[in-house]
Length: 227
Image 1 (spheres, helix red, strand yellow):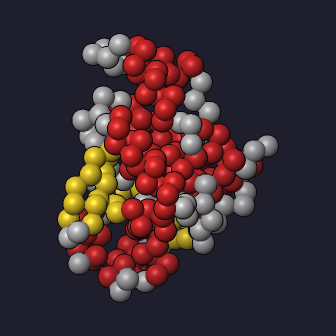
Image 2: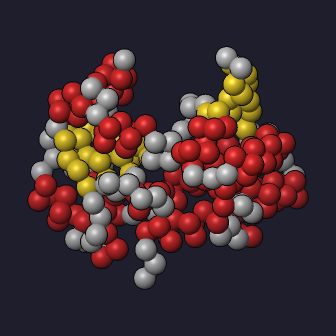
């Protein structure tokens, strides 16, 4: 059985012709051939896939090049090259601020919604257990990290709310591939207190651009705690 890291990489890197057609035919204003050309150019590089994941899963964020090299653990030349490729097809746009060039995803890109949905599904794996976790009574905030995004983090799941550990354990036992999953549970007040103090563990899990916020009813409180 594939590990979660391997499964995640395969889902993002193995884009077959049927998926190309599904995405292409959903864009009625674009001919099939140009869309296929775009998709083939998007998924031919691991560095590019990392950038796609970062931009598509955090569409409101913008990043400068050296920040991306640290976050994605890639060489600066690779990052520069792939950013130019993504700009060339129109998926990424840039602006200069304080003498730094910042990049972000272009929401007007014709395949933006389709690609964002695909990457979101790849990270969450359409996993029934994750779907059940999001239904837990008392849940307020859920972040997928570590194995779910193909990285090495202190935890794979961060849970905030009035959630009971036995309930989480029971759900994780339903899927053998999740038996080694590491998770942490925080009450909402404790989580916000740590976030306000810029606790490194909390800050790194919440801030990382490759992590996925799968459930959030605390957006206002979190933004206030970050100030």
